[in-house]
Structures are given as structure tokens and as C-alpha cells.
Amino acid sequence: MIEPGRFKFFERCCNWLLVALICLAPAAPASADCLAPNNTAITINLPDYPFWRQIARQMEQCGNVDTNFGFDAISVFPSATSPDRNLGSLVGVSNTSFSRLISQRLLRPIDDLVEKYRDQLHDRQLIRSNGKIHAIAVIGNMRALMVHSDLLRQEAVAVPDTYNQLLQAAEALQGNSLYERSLALPLKRGWNLTEAFVEHYLAQGGQLFDGANRPLIAGETGQAVLARLKALSAFLQDDYLETADVGQTLDDLLKFRAPMAINWISSAGPLENPAVSRVAGKIQYLPAPSVEPGGPPAATLWWDGFAIPVSATNEEAEAAFLTALEGLDKDMLEQNRDIAFWLLKDYEPGVLTKDLLAAVNAGMAAYPASEALELLQRTLASHLESFMKGEASANEALAAAEADYLQAARERGIEGL
Image (spheres, rainbow, N blue to C red):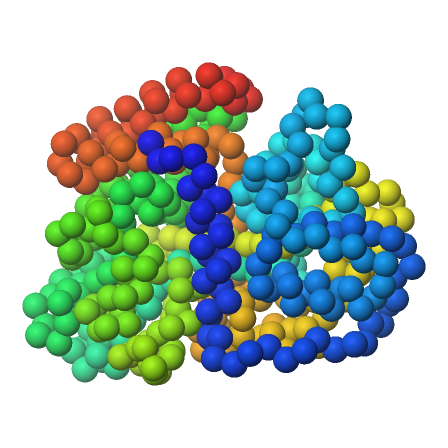
């Protein structure tokens, strides 16, 4: 099992890396203009990430805004038995923290506010739970296929669209003296490996749980995913289970140890910096390959955004919502365009994110964070490692993971079990 807190660590790392997406020039000071001055005292609680600092600076110019940084909805939100469930007027959330707050019934639906200010929002920003909009996504992150397209063209290897094509391309490029290996991807034991399993499983049309939160991974779909991950691992370094994380995968591209990789788009900024990269200007960024031809990418959208707590009055809720939109206006975006993969309506993507934003607009699913999925990934970790080492069959590994999950879920009191 992976240690508690890995999801929080991953989210912090992703948000830190997002500011390096291009990050070749400092952001300009925010504009002093606010088109909708705020006359209602509101309290805004945000994680302390650079992009939130830029947004908050713009919001505070509207007046009557008390902004607090360091908010961590994963660990500090009040329990159901706590007498203090006041989270202020607006909170910064992400996939995982959103699911935690929703499960505690601490976020209010905002369909009425979305309808009122619809012209300032894009459909890709609307985050729903049980059919109701409960959050507005602001920035995104996802796995991407990063390829040295000139080299592939030189070697007469087509840029892959599917994982079968990726395996074929890796085989065709294997043994070239220009690089050490033909493929890099984060399959380190623990969260990296289990996240790859989950995203491949979903892309293959698998359903992780039944309606009662019982896992459904120990079947043909799960076994096919493990076979694919095992085939991919044949092109990685021998100690990939110890070393193949996001940083190592990025380093393999930066130093041209590999011409192809699957990695988070938030890590791509250094690749375009000629001061540190051997491949600046030579990498093509595409959505992760699909499992089946014409299918969805084997990736999910991770997002950060804002939500309105139930502790806000109707007046505070509208004031906070409108003030947040002021903080996300064209001025802020123009001055900070390159510090994140924005999901905002007016965002014009650059070379790193053009094709990825198209995948989001085509309906890429958000990572389905939940307490049950977090627990399943923890219980999967050691069993997937055993399979990759050849110590257990795919069927044995997945069946054992399901059994461990069920025991842990019943002890934790997961709903339905």
C-alpha cells in the first residue's frame, strides 16, 4: 500500500510544476481595474499556489475581500461531527479535495450562478456532482504523449495514436545509437503505477466499481491492462520500479535518453528551455494514446478550481462567485498566460497545450476522485508491483487487491459496504 498523503503530495507537485509550464518570463503586475466592485464582505480560502496568488491579486482589487492562503481541503476540512463547518465564502479545490468536501456535504450547487454568468464561462469548466454544478475548473493537468517528431520522421516511424502503435514504434526505434532507450514513462511502483492502471482501465471502457463501491477490476479488462503495462515496461530501464517517476521521465527527454515519453503536461516547461534542454523546439505534445483506435486518450483531466461552501449566505455566494470571475478576467489571463494550462473561456493555447485542450473540449473525463478510488489505489500498489516483478499472475494480483480493498473499505466504513 502507498503511504497516506500521496494524493496530497501529487497535487502539490503538479501545481508547483504547472508554474514551470513555460515560465520564461515573469508575470506582469495585475491591472487595477475591476468592472464589478464588491460591496459584500467575503472570505476566500485558497491553497498557496502561484497561480492562485495572481488570481487573488485581481480579486482583491474589487474590495471587501479577505483572502487566506494555505487552505488544504484534503486535511483541514471539518468532520461531520465538528461544530465549526464554516469554510468562508469561496474555497480553492481540486479533483481530490472536491470529492472530500462533496462527501461531507460542504459545497453548495451553483447552477443558478452559472446560468446567470454563463457568458463568462466555458463548458469545460463546469464540474458536476450528482447532476448539479458544484465547482468551476480554472487550470488543468493531464498525461501527454511527447515525441521527437523529426527523429520519428527520419526513422520512418509514424507518430502513434494508440498504445499498440506506441509499442510498435518503441520496437522500431529500439537499438538506435542516438539514445539509450526508445521510450520513457512513469511506472515507478506505488502511485505512478496504479495511476497508469486506472487510466488505462477507464480508457478501455472498464468500470472500477459497482453501485455499492465494490471493485470490478479482477476480470479480462484488468488483465489486459496489466499485460499492456508489462509490455511497455520492457522498453524502460531495468530498475524502472524504483526510478521511473515524473522527474526521471522528464530527464530522459531533456537529455535525449529517449525520443518518446508519456508524462504530465505540467512537467513540459523545461523541455522548451534551451538552457537546460537538448530537445527545445523539437518535441510535439499530443494527448496520451488511446487503447482502441478512435477511442479516448488513456488519460484523465486533473483540475484546480473554486467552489462555494454551504457556509456562504446567498449574498456572499453571488458576491464571491462574481469576484472570482473578476479575478479570472482577460487582464489576468493575458498577464499570466504562460504559467498554467488554463481552462478559462478566453485561453488561447500555445504549442504545448493546443492539442491537449482540444482533447478536453472533446469531452475528456475528469479523474473520478473518491474515497473509494483513493483506497483502491492504495491497495493495488503492492499487488501490481508483484505482477510486474513476475511474482504473481495478473488474475492473482487483481483478486488479492480486490480482497484487500474490501477489508479496508469495510473497516473505514465506505458507503455501500
